[in-house]
Image (tube, rainbow, N blue to C red; front, side, top):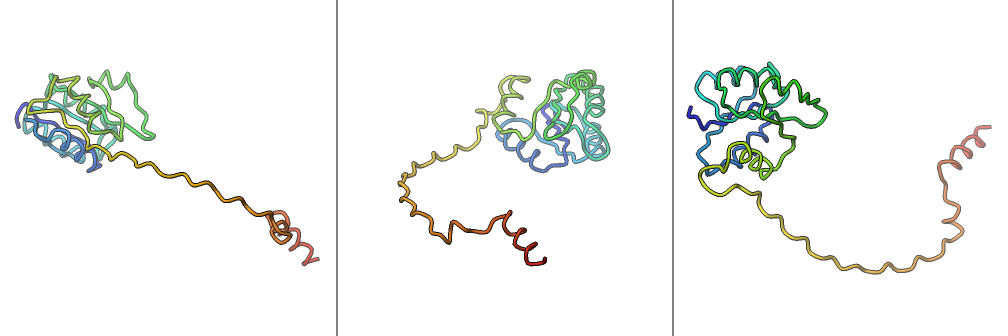
Length: 172
């Protein structure tokens, strides 16, 4: 592996896909690990420039893996991926050597900004932006027709109070 390797450790394939999309056209190589065993193999294979590590994954946790990455690659930039109901412990992350965190779900733009903030401009071209969303078209507002006055039948609709009352009356 080259020094421009990005290790993504997460059980979600969507995370890896977003990272690959964000780094398309750069000189980074994305290596995907679904758990601790695959992450350990990637670390043994060579240098890691950047690691995006989930707080929880098969066989381990992000804090311990961050510590291991920093022991083997002291210059590596490590971001912990967290979201939902995962509890992020800033002090524990700092002790492990994490550079920062990235909240999930994240946009490609947010990832590019985070990486460029840590590494400088990404080599190989323009920062990747998400495809532009089409502008919403204006919708004509049509005035509602006036509602007719309720008839006697509509005003005596059964509701949640009258139904149980009537059932009780029938049973007695």
